[in-house]
Image 1 (tube, rainbow, N blue to C red):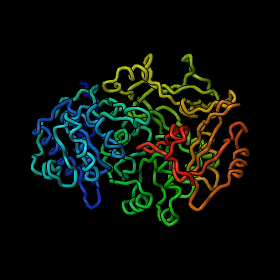
Image 2: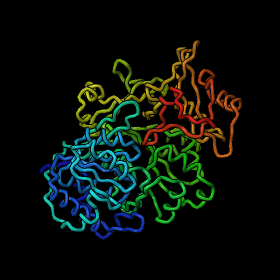
Image 3: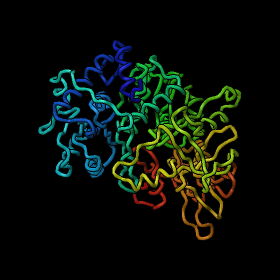
Image 4: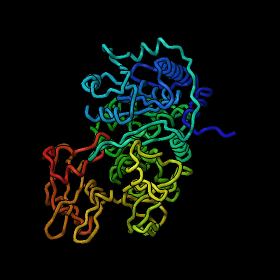
Length: 523
């Protein structure tokens, strides 16, 4: 009587229960769940008519739109694999991923048609080029192809251990790696979300997080599982975020810490119109307690910090709120919320281990590496057994994140192992120094890296984006740090910059800062 674990089973239930409920809003277009699933079925049928079959890769390059969301259902329904590509990547990256994944089809938003046209002769394996929007010669038109198709197709027999998605990492220092995510991986991740959070059919979810980012942290399927409303937002602009939240009565969204910072520092007129009570999940990098405190205190929103990686489908821990936290002051609560927290039920086992593989003590000080095993861990890196063997050792996925464990069992990341600063034999957490500087009233964003030093080996260097109209003095910043940090942790230099270099998913590129690259524009 066993049936395969898959997000498609949650979609089956949604079809039965939520047919007449609002499913998707995308600009002026609105679909009920019945209309949404009919469109998915039409596209599944069109794919099969074109000869696409189980196991084929179907790539997409698009912002958060209804057509992009439909691909997360229409493609796996026929047993094919979604390959959502980060639209912020370069043409060379597009070509590499399309070739490496073996994609037979790529579906593209009109903003990226020109870019893909330039590389068509470099992707010989791609047989079909589909324009989600924008008509163009030599491209299949998504809407007309869908409209001409009947909503009947041959559903695939789902094997829960097979891929539902092939998600590519950022590839900041090497070619992107293809993470093989299975039907079971995603189904268990969705159930983890639903067990640990208050997501229901009453929620209106704002698509701030890109759908390409680890399948929108599985929210492409999670919101459908409960019959919630998907509200598409093609660009994470703070003004547009606030306007959409108010207009559509948004209750829930996901956002990386960089987006939280932009929200916290949006113009006052934007923040004043924001309704209270919006719930926000944040992940992707350790959020600063100061950012959490500001968003919760000024906007009255509720921040929940979750942690994971693309390789673990992608969420495995949550900074779970406990009743005793209500007795704490706002700053202490925020510092706890900034921790990565405790493992999801049934999703994965998460430990912090030392060099010998033993768990570190729960003292909030001894650092080790976060390792993970269980239902959430990827099948492996596609066509890269060497990288897979390096990442998964002795049955555990090694995250590369350095963390401590507190007395209550909450994990707290102190850094990426490669970003820990060793100065005069002392380990310095760049995350700790950054969190301190973010409490300075004139600091909007900050990144701290280790720079070579003749005496100490390396010392911390801070790169700071000031708040609008501010220009904090180095002496003031140094004094502020000395008041809140051990003296050996205080940066030896402070550089004001207009912006920090980031990956296409919004993570700060610290290797660029360490290398003193020319694209660091000083303030």
